[in-house]
Length: 466
Image: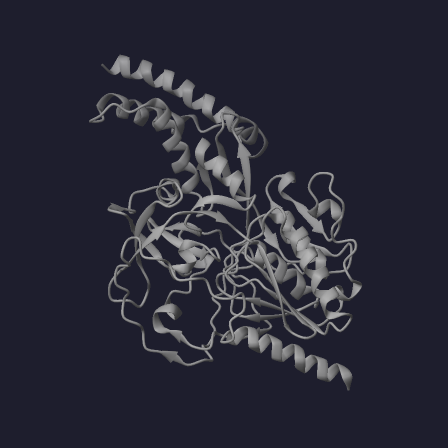
């Protein structure tokens, strides 16, 4: 028996080494980490052999290898993951702005799915899910023990099918339950509106492939509608979970002078060390023309406010940090999420891929976003927040196994400057099939933070005339 097991272990070791080679581990080991840890790999193959021989049910080799890779990645940080063929395809489709599901940006925390941010105008957003909500059940299945990919697969599905989500919100005495109807998520990544004559509002809900181009068109229209009377701009990045890096550079470049440094990254490999500037080669893809070239020159000099909150993450923080460092805009709102790490998608050649954290983002002045986020120039809380909502404010630093900030993780504390009301009663289960509430207008008259931003711009206009 021991001889057969040892023989099997050697065969399994060959299989594992093959997987490692496909992941370029051998090259990485030669370059950075010295020889492969043979003793640890031998222990791995022994466990592999035990499972194959002694587990209560027969397990497919492919499943074991996939789960091993997934565990290896998920144990690193909250954002590294193994993408099977289906998940890889969905990721590619999602960056185009259309996919099927509920519309939630999620991460993993203590074995549960945690909401980073609901995507605007989606079933999850209309149902009232918020940043920090902890999903504990999907239909009748407990989330504890699932991988993030498994949970995402359960949440996605054919349009018009339903799923019941049970989630916990800090400050509530019992879980909340809602039944959502899946939909084809078609995200309008840029929304715009003239708030008052001369004051334009631009909302970026997510950074997608065409976000920069869409924003440029919205800016052109706003300036034409103002007939030369533009006085101030508001860029709203609240609850924007991020997206594509080149789109973040494009949005920044729309408001910054040409050749300005937008962001830089630092990692262990040369490929992970980048400096990205407000130049076409850093935000254009393919052979398309420079859609920012014909923007009105005033867009780079008019008074500007950027709105952020704890749901602003990743690409949103890059834009806010760049505009803040170059003193191009006043950042207003609350501390951002603090996701300052770079994930690189590395295809494996068999339809699968790994999403691997390869670097950290730094603002032009050298500030690391990771686990700290962007501190607003002017802190403005929401007008009225419940105790539960105040407790549910989650940031990158709250996630298990988050990357540290190289400058040190100084805890950031803010006072709530607005009144806090009593916590609401937990919601009852939403009846299956019940119509979801219609989404509110792009701009709410009761949006306290937005009104404060508009008031600030008006004040700057008055000061500028003196």
